[in-house]
Image 1 (cartoon, helix red, strand yellow):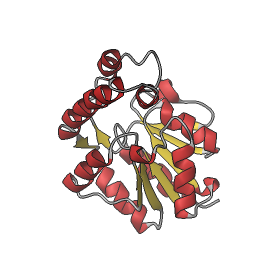
Image 2 (image 1 turned 90 degrees about the horizontal axis):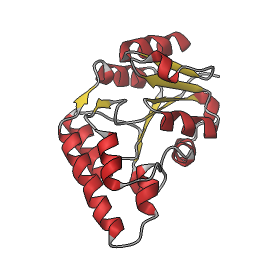
Image 3 (image 1 turned 180 degrees about the horizontal axis):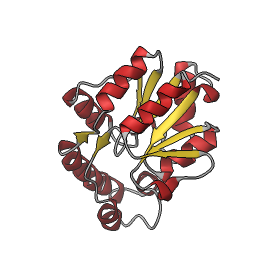
Image 4 (image 1 turned 180 degrees about the vertical axis):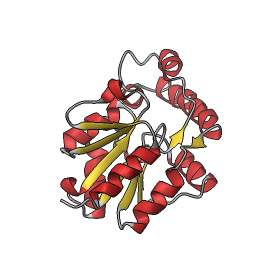
Amino acid sequence: MRLKGAIFDMDGTVFDVPYDWKKIKEELRTEGKPILVHIKGLSEPEKSAKWKILEGYEKKATQKAVLKEGMKEFLLDLEKWGITTALVTNNSRVNVDFLLNKFDLKFDYVLSRERGLWKPSGAPFFAVLDELGLLRDECCVIGDTRFDIEAAREVKIRRIYILNADKDKFASNDVRVFATVQELRAHIESLL
């Protein structure tokens, strides 16, 4: 089926962002749970205190974020090719808007954590498909972590593309790993 939609992750995919996830998880004492799941399950005042810590780390990292090389041109090509784009992130809308404005990027649809739909659940991807009127077989997911892979698998999106220089870390039968945006762009162009 023809590719009509591309669902992007934000941090680590569209932008290189200097997060020290190990340090953040240790400070938040997440006990091996995903950060947002951990914080959501807390009672006040601990919940608000941990949100504040997370938001502080996010703000600092967002200020230092850089656009991945070739990403702006890739997004323009997708638009030219008639492929709808969505941005799905576990980050906040404040940080999303800051980065999209700073780098002058546009997505057809943006879903941030305020919706309460977080990866690795497939729920945010289901919401994108519904909102944009797309079928899962018409879409690809472009991410950089296992959260993106798990969410795509739950929705049964078969085109899973990971941007990561470490091809061995994520490669499997249903995941294609690309070291650069340019490699990914060439692959998608070959599907048209």
